[in-house]
Amino acid sequence: MINTTEQNTAYDVFLSYRHKNRDNKICKKVHTLLETFKPPGRCKEASIKRVFRDDAELPAAGVLSDTINTTLKSSHVLLVICSKDTPESRWVDKEVRTFIELGRTDKIYALLIDDDPDMCFPSSLKLIPGIENRTLKVKYTAQGFSQKKLKEELLRVIAAATGTQFEHLRFAIRRRRLARSIFAGLILTVLLVAAGLYSLYQWVTASYYYAYTQREEILIKDIIDDINNNLVSAVKNIPEAAPALVKKINDNNMYLDRMMAIDGSTKKNIEAKARNYLNLARVYMITGDTKETLNASKEAIKIYEALAENSNDETKKRDLATCYNLTGLFMQYLSKYDRAIYYLDKAADVYTKLEKSFKNNEYSESLADCYNSMGVCHYLLKNYREAADTFVREINVRKKMSYDMSLTENQVLFAGLYADAASCYNSASENKKAADCYKQAVALYKDLYEKSNEPELHKAYVVSLYNLGINSAYEKDNAEAEYYLRLSIAEADKLVKESIPEYDPYYLSMYAMYDLLYAPDKKEEALNMVSIAFKRNSTDSFIRHIYAYCLLFNNYYDEALDILNTLINEDNSAEQKIKNDLGLFIIRGYSTDLLPGFMEDLRPSVSRQT
Image (cartoon, rainbow, N blue to C red):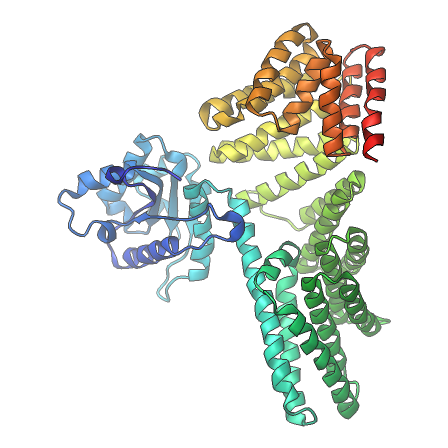
């Protein structure tokens, strides 16, 4: 956030609009939504403090143009409400031009409320490169506009105004919504169960319970898309209610058994009991009871497997896949990653068959989400090759879904997936596969950065370039490796000078690593550079690794060994990375007499820790 004195009050967002009826109405709504926005717990920094709208902030301003000019200078983001009436306003055009003159074109956003931007943009707005990527679209018809759509679109403005990464904010909002859905579902369970117990043997109560189970079915289907990222948030929203809910749902199971004795084991009764077991598993998960969570999940699975056995019914198969998926996610939340992988793999198998049989993108999306969760579990188990292969399966599923790759959010999604897969392949010493994935990430991040000029995307481009160069260097005759490393250094230098000066230690470390690999006669200069980086940030593992290598090749053997052994003691997986890096130095021509012995000296630290 921008800190200013009272004489120069900072505004997060300046709203520029024509004082026409529609424009005014939606502008007021935007103002309210921005200033009342409550950031999720994972993105507390995304808090909007003040929004400027002239009739709201300056009801009695003496010289309006002077005040607006001053306010523009102290505003972080300019949001222009664009309708068919906007081009006629010289004030809106002037406000946009002023913001351009302040050098903040990348902080100008447009809210398009009619169809055609050419008819709605003021002339100055049309001159801004990349404005189409910062245009929010909320159609305002005679029937009004969608507030839900408006809230979703404004997240991009909130992220830009508060310096929050948009994808992080968007996913944090989704987590919060899911948490509320889960909480509402559990409360609904308590209320409906309590109501049902009043008239245990009455047919009216049975009908009421059927209606409840139908609502529960809708709830489960609504949350399955996002539940893997939101279980922790759900726990935070339910304090000491979990043990009481366990008792209530167990009582409800007994109630269901009595109903089935009266009414027979109808399909609705059987499915209601299965869903009840899933509710029970969810509540046991909240209490942290792994054994009971698994037992309840297995009871639900047993029922769904029996219903789906020898059946081609789409709904039964989908319910079975959902049950496997939820069980896997429960296990993932409880850190039982092997069990999570087992159930997620079963879910993926059913989703694959559903996808082939019914050609429904919903199943493809669920399959991709399963692979993503499995990849995360493999990664946390340090099964890096399996994690990478699973992320690649997710990529292949999503590629078949025909995403619109002109949309920024889709490019960000795929760039992140390729980078995740590449990182895991790198940890598994599959350097060729890592380089192939980093090459895909580089192309996407380059396009994203050039369109938006956002520093975080520039940094992601730099990191991917550097890693592409390092992994390509394992092929001795790969001429592109040096090119990628030099380009990553040039882009890192640009990043430091233009937007993120605190990235300088990483830039110096990257430069030092390049000198070690391709200009060994400059190894003393490399040590000097990375020493500066180390003094500025002595805790970052990336900088510490390169500092140790520079010490080693400048004959500070013991100092290098101490740093690398410390890194291994902090994280066992660092040993494999260090050996990979030292192997790279051998490939690049360093002494085969020194390095194998040095690698042997790394082992005692691991033995001591074991």
